Figure 1 (cartoon, rainbow, N blue to C red):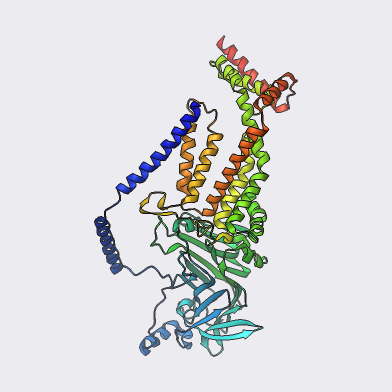
Figure 2: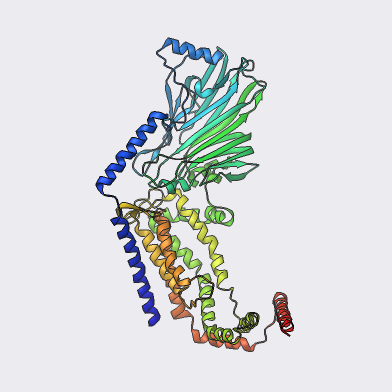
Length: 617
């Protein structure tokens, strides 16, 4: 009864501490006058900075030519030499089907807008992967008359036709009537993948073949989610190289890498991806990723700045490179359509066995459940089935705890008897375990067996496209955090809102730890206070998951509640302490056969004990 009273008092103390923290943050929030003064100060700083430097929203800042000024046009044509043959025009050509809309500009012949037609952001804005200068694409080369040019600065001449029901856009930067550099886009109906070809004709005497022709592609990831920090955690540059090897640049810091034999590279923006794939591999690639998010903020527009530089080979002085563009969802159902390119490997399922479980077990299993159940209910059903499948492991773990509990008086007796001889105490303890048929590691092994499931599902929920913008109960998006209250201030590491699913999950974790870690926890000298950890862990989880996918918090809440239920059933209806004690006593009477490892360990301990006695003498 006393132990239960302590636990209740601890729970009350935990709630009071959390309430006091909330009250302190509320009391210390700035007054409206202070907020207005700080806002005015920040606006003045922004204004001063904007007067000194150019805006950094656009990375596609090629020189602007006033096409209405004949002198400016003449100067432009004089700078680019032979490519001045193409008449400058600001026209934009649209390629679209029912899935995606692309706009290709005459300036640079590149995609200046890529819009998803079936998806919107959390605030109902269309999902753009390329928009308002956040991306640039071009070839950097040197001409035979020693001019260094980039195609993003050149003007192309468009020609839109149809071929076999597909829309074909030819963009040509001409250096003469029959001399040109062509970008050819071919879009199919009902397909995110766009065939893209770079070829030249009659330029062998214009492009200097002794110097590299570099393909340069840069993109700033546009924010699409409520939490920019959370979205940034799953925004990264992924690439396929060395005959199928998948690698990544850093998620959290600036990174760069030089690779060979690159098949494709993906600028993944959490749930959407911009991918460039070659029909033949790129011989070399210099890849960069720069983190643009330092803290959570509603004003941040971009997550990361990605860059790639890849040399293209000339054949007979001409270019001929066949590729594909993919602008679309990072959805396994969609990317599986492009198995020959292996684009589904760009999805972060996880590494090793964790990725295998996600790709081949949880993803198809959840897709099956959600095909006839509401998405939130499908999570609950999947969690129940997973926990039931793992119940034998839970049983083994709890049985081990019960056996250790039965042996506790004898272990305490050994501890008192050999309190001045740690080695002898350890030797006798191991001997007791052997006679009783109890392994101290048997409680750890079930936990280790559950780790692949735990980590695989930890990766599944935040990256499952199937959960995106799917509501359940009070959560309007299972792939983002739920909100039951908005705070008038920001709590460090927590945020400016209260999510209910993480609170429920933390409470469930607390009671689960009370049933497991909380039992029989004598404080060992030099060891951390386990009860303190028991109270700290749910609080840490509460802060950690407040900005995470509500689907993940829902899973942890249901999972821990089911585990608690299973443990109560095992404790009250399956296991009997008296029967366990009787079985242990029977085990002690049986001769215990040692395996080679146990025999070797016993002999080593006995030898060490003998040496210790000899040394004392």
